[in-house]
Image (cartoon, rainbow, N blue to C red):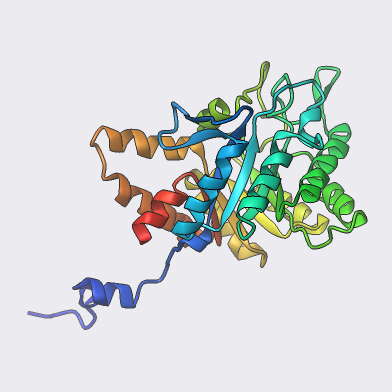
Length: 323
């Protein structure tokens, strides 16, 4: 009987050997934990479609971020639910707005925690779109000034990084100019460079109360069918001054993460979004899958595709599993 000269199973026979040659790793330091901040005091309410994820008032953030830090998760990103909404999304850049207060609270209570902020208008507009509506359409250029003002207000409040997610053309350049002109040259921009018009965002829109009142976002978010266009979007953001490029969603777009990793030398982030999280949670609750193993395998696959950074609602769970 002929035997193969090379037997790959030799390197799989026990965990010590497997871990010795493991090609991809993940740690809590790779993860960013999203937080939803809402008005009120003493509020901590679970999002029905996202088990284990909570909307909380500003006064609850200190304990939450301390818990994250204790697990080794040293970076959060904030999403806000304002007291009021209006057509212009003015609450996004209000000096004493919900996110501005949240940043200050975290920095006062846990100064070592890195704080990023989502820069978009959808949570603050009464129509639920990511920009200003003129003549029945989301107007790109009039939205840019508001986005830049929002990012600047976050930097002034103490944010460590801003992350525009609106998908307006030119917003990275507008934000970079506003930050630099106001002496915030050290604040990086993590751009949602490749954000698809995805069906995986449903639970997030429940959590942030930001579903469009009319129409959808396919006029400004990317078509899921397109890959080459993703490279054009990322190239524009690099030229405008982005420091980190993000792909959203993650699991359904691992090929796009891989292409960005091959094409660009900037750090690549991926957002493991609410729908991707909720499906794992729902199947695990029904006993159909091993939730921890699927979580770990999923996040590892995002890293293997080329993501340096993963934004995920599993950040705390994964950090606990890593020990």
